[in-house]
Length: 181
Ligand SMILES: [Zn+2]
Image 1 (tube, rainbow, N blue to C red):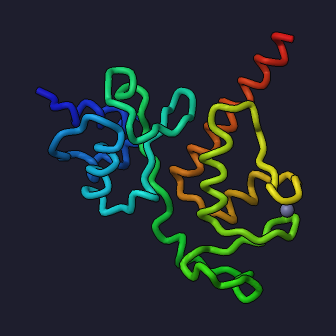
Image 2 (cartoon, rainbow, N blue to C red; image 1 turned 90 degrees about the vertical axis):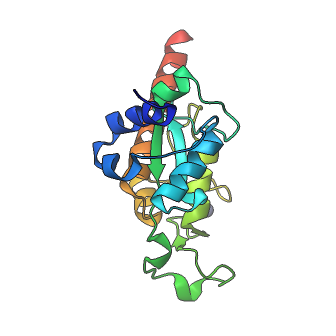
Image 3 (cartoon, rainbow, N blue to C red; image 1 turned 180 degrees about the horizontal axis):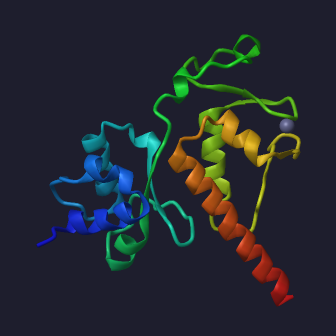
């Protein structure tokens, strides 16, 4: 009765009942995570840079070449980024080198400047699957507070869920390592 896509979506729906209306009714072949992202982007009218599939168990983002199988289907969760991020106002804009006009500029507590997409990429690339429970400025190593990151990135609800899950999993990993010593 269920197609493959329907089965994949059962996992999403468990984690996000509110997305039910938007993601039901996908068609076509979904063999890899890349296929799934592509299909969902079309269906939801989302840019691929703002739509991610992550493993809810270990908070790792799935690479596009990962094939869909029983375990991916059971653990994958959808993260939709904030589509309105580029339109968020920013008080730092005048002081910033306007090389990327669509980027949301962020002045961090250490006074270094960055932008929301760079910060989110840093979170996605450096935190999952590690024992780090905080993010440091790559330039001066000052710890960036969690609530500031959520604020500066204008995180969507999904991005907050993902970020919190990553920190929760990493904290457990850290505790386990410490107990093992
Ligand atoms: Zn800094």
